[in-house]
Amino acid sequence: MKSIIHLGLLPLLLSVAQVSGQTPPGRYVPIIVASAYEMEQPDDPGCALFKDGYGLILNEEWANARKKFAELLGKYPKSTCVDDAAYWSAYALMHIDRKKAADAYRTFLHTYKASRYYDDAVADLTMLDPMGIATAPRAIPVPRVHDNGRAVTATIAPQMKKLERVLLRESRLYSRLGLASTFTPFPMHVSEELNKETVLKMEALYALGETREDEKSFTTLKDVALNRAQPEPVREAAMEALSHFTKHDVMPVFVEIARHDTSLLLGSYAIDYIGELGTDKNETVVILIDLFNGTQPGRSDQRETIFYTIADIGNEKAVEFLRNVALTSDEYDLRRDAVFYLGSIGGEKAREALYEILQAK
Image (tube, rainbow, N blue to C red; front, side):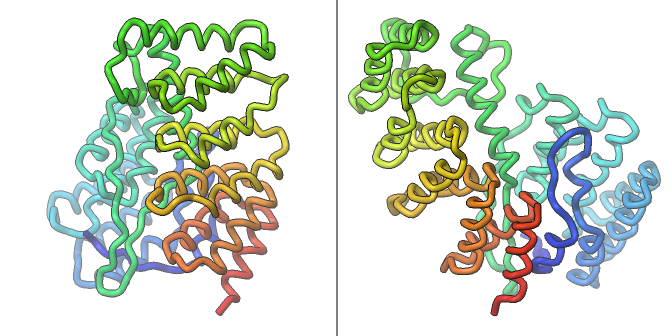
């Protein structure tokens, strides 16, 4: 795996990651990144070409940039900068031919699954072709390693995590409507073979969530959602139905599942619902922080889900939480993620936290 020089917090203070509107996610990469490659690999002629191509990107000379990246890929296929050139070549093509750019991004995602630009490419492809994400491979988690003393990490923005959760939820809806064979953004998780009786129960639970909200329907759905003896898909259907209730307090149900349930999948869904359904965001962040601090050992994925859900809310309490993690956590990778998310949130409080982190010893 190639080694990328870590420039500390400077890029975050120069740029705030925004994934919105028509602005391609790649645009927030600070100019300093280009010179970092040359500094890190002075004897790699491919990286020198990448720097030249990246300069053309900044000048919006899309065709010339693609020529420079093509030269790199042709002459130096073993350069440490090949995946960088492939990503920025697709990015440049997005400004020339959007259809061809979508194909270029798909090729990139199949070829460079461990690239630090993987999530940016997914975001760009989603913007170009919302259906295209269905044919893109799922990202392979890149382990954090150390090469010559330098940390190599892959941090995923909260916006991308939220996109995944939304698509997973849409997958359940498509499956319920019988459309999974024609379009499923991500493969549905099915823990067991669904027989007709199980499907019938799920449909009954969905229907309860769409009829009159009364005490009996609430109690029934709650009991099913919390009953670990029930099949996982049935409990998931009960949770989905409960998420539409407004007259009853459904939050304790999801908190109970997130805190104590043995199913990691249902725990993840519960955290998702907590983040979305809480009307008082300050109270929601307090609940999530409590869950984060009380997460059982061995549940790192669930802890990560809570972490980025807090970041996704992004209010002052979330900023304070991320600040504390960045300043006091014993886990270096967690501190880096906190800094990244502070940069993603932006705003005066987040900037103050970043300056405080810069000044800390």
